[in-house]
Structures are given as C-alpha cells and as structure tokens.
Image 1 (tube, each protein chain N blue to C red):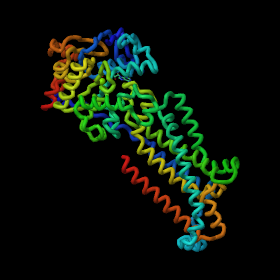
Image 2 (image 1 turned 30 degrees about the vertical axis):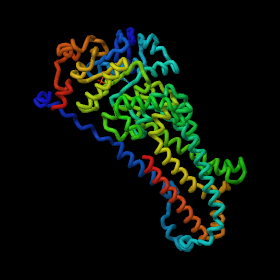
Image 3 (image 1 turned 120 degrees about the vertical axis):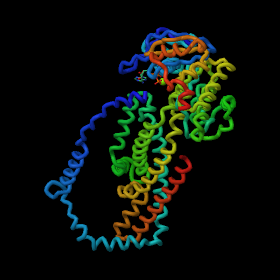
Image 4 (image 1 turned 180 degrees about the vertical axis):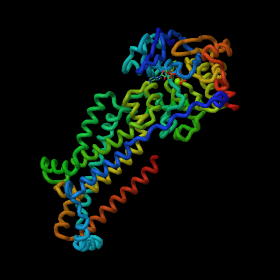
Length: 258
Length: 270
Ligand SMILES: Nc1ncnc2c1ncn2[C@@H]1O[C@H](COP(=O)(O)OP(=O)(O)OP(=O)(O)O)[C@@H](O)[C@H]1O
Ligand SMILES: [Mg+2]
C-alpha cells in the first residue's frame, strides 16, 4: 500500500510540482496517471521511491515513511520498488544480462559487485526475468544492439529482477511506435495480473490509459483532479483533466496514422 | 493548431548583436605575443640566429640521421629500466587515479566537500612539472629509478584523474538513476552504471600516459632519476651523435608500438 499524506514537492526555483496530495494505492492495482506536460506526473512517481524528496507531508510504502528514510533504509525500500523509464536507462555498452543484474544489486555484497561476480542464484533470477519478457536469447548481447522495444523489455526485466512489490513506469512507451507500445503495455499488464505487482504508469496517450488503466488518476498543476476507473473515464473526463479540448496528439492511434 | 500559426505567424526575433569577445580576444592575443617576442619588452627573438647557427647544427643532424646500430647492446639495460619505470608508474598512477577521478566528478562524488578537496589536491599535484618532481625525489630518496617512478606516478595521477573526471562528468546519467532506483549503494552504482561507460576512455588515457612516461624518461635521466635519459645525456656530452640518433630511433619505435597497441585495444573496447 502506497499512502500519500498531504505530500508536497516544491523544486528549487519555486515550482510547485505536487501540492498537498493525498492519495492511496492499495496492493495489486494497475494505476495510470495522466495529465498535461508539467502537471507533476514524474514528480509523483519519483516521490514514491524517494528519487524526488518531498518538501512537505509524507509518503509511506507499506507503512514505512519514504520521506524520513535515509541510507540503507531508503535503499531497502527502493529494492522493493522497480522502476521503468521512458529512455530505458540501460548501460548500452554492457550486456543485457549485466543490465538486468543491476536489479539484484540490493541483494549483492559490495565486493561481489566490484569484481562483477554475481551469485548464481541472482543470475538465475535475472535469466527468469528475461524469460518473462521473452528476450532471454539476447542475454549476452550488448544492450546498444537492441531495438527500442527490446531495450524497454530489458528495462522491465531489470525491474522484475528486483522481485519487487511495486513497479513504477514513467512514460514507458513514449519513445516507441504504436505496435511496440501495445506490446510493452501488455507486458506490464500481464506482470500486474500474474504476479500481483502494484503497477503505476505515467502515460501520455489517453487511449492507452483507458485500455490499460484499471484506475486512472488525473493530475493538473500538481493536484489530483480525477480519480476513477478507466471505464468511467470518457472524453469529458479527459477534457476536465487537461483543461482544454482534446486533439489528435492526445491519442496514440491518431498520432500514428498522421 | 497548424492553421492558426499559419494565419498569424509569430514575430521573428531580432538578430542578437554580435559579440565583440572573439575579435577582442584575437587582438589581445596578438598584442601579448608581440610583447613576448619584441626586443624592447620580451626575449627579442632573432630568427637570423637560427640560420647563422645552422652550420653547426648540420653536422649534428647528419650524425643523428646516421644512427649507430652497433650501440644497441649498450642501450638494453637503460632501455629496459625506462620501460619498467614507465609500466610501474602507469600501473600505480592509473590505479590511484581511478577512485580519485570518481571523487573529482560532480556526477559520482559523494558530496561537495569531498569533491572540492579531491579536486584541490589534484590541481596542486598537476601544478608542478614531472621534472621538478624528479629533482625533489632525487634529493629526498637518492639518485636512481625509484625517484623517477615516484615522479611519474604523481604526474600520471594528475593527468589521468583530470581527463577521466571530465569524461565522467559527461556520462549518460540515466543508468545512474536506474541503479539508485533499484536500491544500489553508491559504490555499486559507480561500478555498474558509470565504470562501463568510461572504461574505453580509461584504457586509452592509461596507454597515452604510458607513452608520455617513455618520453619523460629522456629528461628524468638528466636529473639522475634513472632510465635511458642518463645514457642519452652522456652520449650528447661525448658528442657521439650517431649513438644519440640510435637512442632517438629506439624511443620512436617504442612510442609507435604503444600507439599501435592503443589503437587495437580501443577498437576492441569501443
Ligand atoms: N529537477 C527539477 N528542478 C526544477 N523544476 C523541476 C524539476 N523537475 C521538474 N520540475 C518542474 O516541476 C513541474 C512538474 O514536473 P514533472 O516532471 O513532474 O511533470 P510531468 O507531468 O512529468 O511532465 P511531462 O509530461 O513533461 O513529463 C514542471 O513545471 C517542471 O518544470
Ligand atoms: Mg514526466
């Protein structure tokens, strides 16, 4: 369970990216966050694993305060939360397997990571994560030699290798073409349903949000302006969230056929 | 959206005024050069002297260009010493430089204090030339290769840590964020997300420094810090310019060999 209690983030420079947000996300949900650029979606996601520190209020994960955690305690909380990025954030120069093994660092002694010798059990976990996203045959290929969609699957495998309770995905398909976007989103949905991992995804495109979000959270100007099921979210709701009428740019299929 | 912008195009920005910094800089540079060269204020560079002294130079040059290959055997011990000094100094210097570079980059330093202290120390180390270090260590340790090695280590540390920390400043920070998000500790993050990105550069810099060390051995010998420089100095003193020519040829081949090694290694690493 993720619990935001009056959480606020004010960046140096004075931008209020989160304003007094109160929100609960129970275990096992598939949540999609939508909102205009600059609404605070990335900030909200990064507050959950403490990559962005709160400037007010609190956020707890399974009862543990992320805002108050430091050092080893913060790392322990983070180890239970996988993260997936728009730009994949892989180490391009090294192998797919080494990238996925980064998800095992939290369970690896420092000396082992320094000499690059992971435990066989951790390698096994990484291999299984690669199998789950269907690219285990690329394990010893350099990450740079993969297509965008394959790289994002490696990103997902890295998150899975943590054996997390929660997965955060910040615009995971924004750099991908429409068919690949659907494949990646289906992977995330499958992971959520089969493994029961709470999954929180920032999405740009409303049609994707509607298809894959069991629950949709709308953000505007750092505040929660919609919280409901994906089925209920019709055009009027999105117009409300965006504060303007919708355009072809807001929909993946339309953007693709232009 | 597009039709709206077509109907009323946004006003074009006015071209910003040209900066005078470029021309002013060139003018300042020319003035300073004149000041340094002129006979009233500076060293009074006399190009005629080069031509006047050319006769003497020609004799030397002719000898140097006819290296005495029979000298080879006598250069072996000194040449080996030079190579060994260069390798030892490169290994130790580059070994220390790796952590020093990570502490000297904004991307990987644990905090601003460590960053500033490490950079300060490295700046001080780099401020002195290798020859001066050699003189200091010869005075402190006695004549011999150890003094030369110590001088080269400091020199290598300064160069590598500087080049490498600047490379680290420019790495892709995405993987760092990913490692942190996965609960990795700082050292693990550096090892898995940063080190692989800068490894080819690190290898290239290290080989470059090895090459510099071989070259430096010619002057280190002058102050008694071991290596081929002592022999070179001796032969210059005796006026045996054919032997000098042979040593220069050897050094050239050695540096060339390192360059070849560097190229092949880099091709395999990139
Ligand atoms: N590191 C930062 N320093 C200062 N301001 C920031 C920083 N990161 C984000 N902001 C500002 O905070 C606000 C919210 O940013 P955030 O990245 O959370 O928005 P977003 O909804 O993810 O937008 P996008 O769809 O463009 O990714 C924006 O106005 C942004 O400019
Ligand atoms: Mg964002």
